[in-house]
Length: 99
Image (cartoon, rainbow, N blue to C red; front, side, top):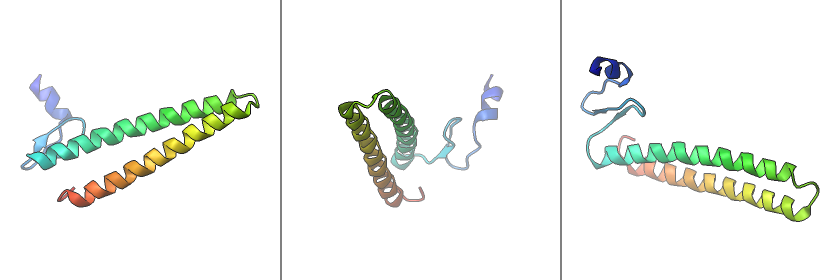
């Protein structure tokens, strides 16, 4: 069974082998990289879901200005959230050595 798992694990030199996210360094920097990668996937999935929900709300507004405004506001907030996470990601990419 271990041989089967090693097929999916990436071979690392001096790091930790993981099947899902690639190779990570040992220590706090490796943990931070893993956390940031998991957050990126989660935030991306949440943003896509939010955009879909906002689009459905906008389409089903049936000309109601209040519902259309609410859907537009949600879409703007999602875009602002994505941009804020982009700034966070660039900051940590600059902060963490060899990221």
